[in-house]
Image 1 (cartoon, helix red, strand yellow):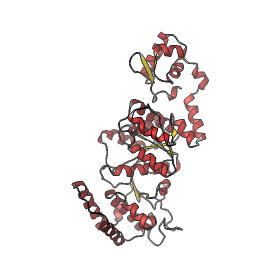
Image 2: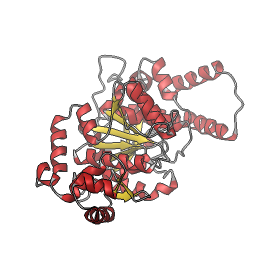
Image 3: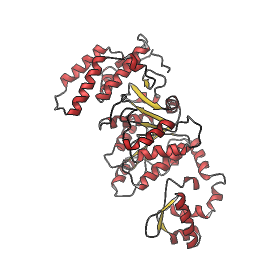
Length: 414
């Protein structure tokens, strides 16, 4: 793993008087400490004029910094979990930097070339990242490819899940690296769609990166175990938390800041007003990244978050093309539109009865009679076409003889 030049013009990067191996060991040590005490490395970096200055501090000076902070902090009644964290933090502090931990090939530090450059823009960048999966290709993709995060509710509606899949799939088709948090719901849908869209690509092609709120070797939630395996095989697992670190509530906002930092844009698909997705969006706005939101049905709890963002000036996202255009990816947007039109071209396909049925459902739920009238086919013909499209997964029946479009199954037909 290459390393950056350790000479610098300012305190944001360490100078060259210290061996790179020692700087890497200190970076990993600070990451281990921050895995048990949230924000510790950021506080030290703020006090020392940047992470580079923090890395120049000796272990004794870091211990003194901890002691000073402890004396200033009000005493709080600690529960068993907090006591466990404090004990682990104290043990790592006493141990000091470890050359063995720094030599781990699954760790990339702030002083390495492979460290994602966009994370250096964070006011509190992670001192080290722990990675699994297609590591070299994944880190290269984060540094060189367009990166967009797709985030949202852990308990989405069918509409939200379909929109997440459609956006992630079509971004992947356009060559964008899709980032999410590998949680249940929208995150899982985005990762799965990106991986599905990549079927048939050459082995080693990275299409998605999962940013975790736990160690990269911890499968949380356990119900996503199969998806973890898929991401390891076709993407990258990345976290600032050391090996074996379990999921805790305070670690997820930290995860969200890394997700926002890696991305050029964040797309929010459903979420309550106080959801973690909005935390990711807020970090993105603070970093000057683009934020887009998928509009939902008025009055629904899961629409509240995206609608709040839209009122605050977020861009509307109804498809992946909106994301591409918002970011000015003209070349990618053209390629994406061409792929959706198919080999016959958009005008020719629009004349096909099945395409007319799909276009009739673009405006919302319709009965077979309404579809027949809009698509200029007989009612029996509309029913036959709808039945075939339902089998293909492009539409679904929603009761009362009505049908709706499945947003995760139609892009290739339109």
